Length: 379
Image 1 (cartoon, rainbow, N blue to C red):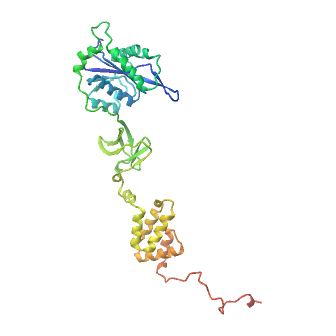
Image 2 (spheres, one colour):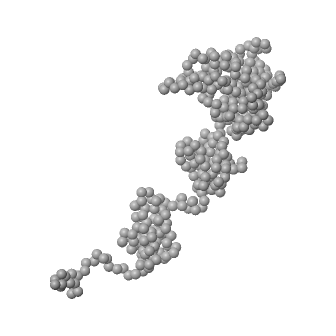
Image 3 (tube, one colour):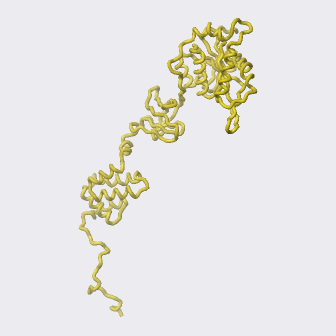
């Protein structure tokens, strides 16, 4: 069936089969570059460029640069059913990738993938790929490229020659047809070019964090166990629940954790607020002996946070016992070198702190007492 193409209506996009080798100047390693091709329906005006891969970021960026080259947007984009753009291929109702849908909304275009195994649906792209292979890639086959920018510079120069090459059976060339047909009918470009956003579902862990590329980001703790939609741009991480934004973080490109205090449960927020200075101030309000016991705990641990719980356990005893008794118990513990919390509790539970102070066991006893008998007493 002959297809009739309206001016400015469709842009057909595809990748060429052959790749172009790019040589690393330092290691000599060869990396194949992919060649992206786009063709306008009415004028056959063609655009081509090289990218490192056919991944989703390269796929979307190539189409954005295509519209920039054309100076406007078409109404429809017709791609192949490649995995980067179409999540589930279907003859009647294909599923587009979420990032591809966002790209289409940004440029206000409709994406209509060709039917699976029906290359005639995008015949313009198929013919455009053949022409690019013959008039651009074939002319570059004996050249050696050491960077992607160098390759694209050569492609752009040959692309201008291709678009100015005269038609065989039609008057003029692709450039003239574009200026007469497609260019006046193109929609204006958006104010800013599209910036790639990776969109993926993530499940909130029990620690109210989600993971993206070895970095963890917090969300409000009430979403534990829920599946959220994560949008990752170059600088921002945004999390959505039922199309409503619930958390936003600056993106980190290194392993680690980013936690917003407001996302934590109340008890976690209170625990996060404890510092050695705050514990010492509380102990000082009770007494100097209590402060001495707490300071010893904080100083003897490899990290002060290791002593937080035992210090809080001691200080919370002031809610069950008068401060005077806790101070006396700490005095006994400091004097005897008792550093376990259960030992201080035992002093309080046995009321030892209320007994009069006893003499030290090391006190010297008189050696000439009448009841002291030596070996001479026994014969």
